[in-house]
Length: 334
Image (cartoon, rainbow, N blue to C red):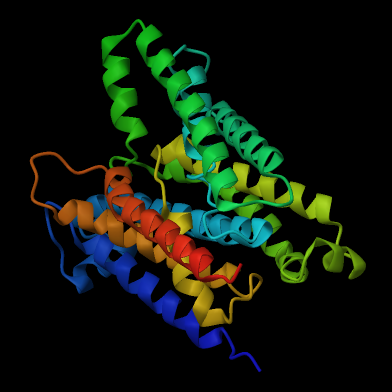
């Protein structure tokens, strides 16, 4: 009998809560735990301004985006039954960035317009849909990586073209730094801009849990159990695009969270894709918040972009997964 996931979920909630408190405390002007909490709920002068207007939006965005990426990665890996499935591998982040850049830097919408996440979601939906269509039912590691590489490269080239055609050099500088991914200087407005889309994506993905459990037995078995596999696939792709697009629209490109987290969680839940969803979301929230704290602690003249840090962690992990899969295949009897 599988162990309950309740202790794991409670542990991850405690970890995320501790990291959230640390995030409110740390910065150019460090605060004690007591003062940070007091500044959050009562007027503590300048400390309240720092906590409520600067650190709280950043903390909540890290939790929201990390949760979304972790949940999305677990759902996509369960859908394709492939450990390399993730929005960053699908090129969704690059495509979402291109969608946002296209409308933002050609003056179609403002930086805080609801059309910005809509454009990013459209780009992410297109990229994930293309990769899933190319990969098909018999998805292999090679096909998945090549399809994602092609879509991501195309989106990256299109974004570079948009940058090169931008008439404003200040806009070019801003977009380049934005594409690196950062939660610096984000406000509650950014949080409310992304929250509805991430909430909708989370609801759709969590509702797909029973279908993912049946799909683990194979598409034919899942269909015999009453699962509408095409609808399940469409729901997960749509939800992944909603979450990724909203996250990229407010924080730029932050990759590999959804790739790393499910691998850490899956052995703890008996490799059940449905039971992995909530723990993966919580672990993603904790991981991204920890990364955001780390970039503030690194002693550099300018803050290291969080997208750079997650890539430095995620790329070696990605290569390790490929090496392990290669070793497993070589050990399989012919």
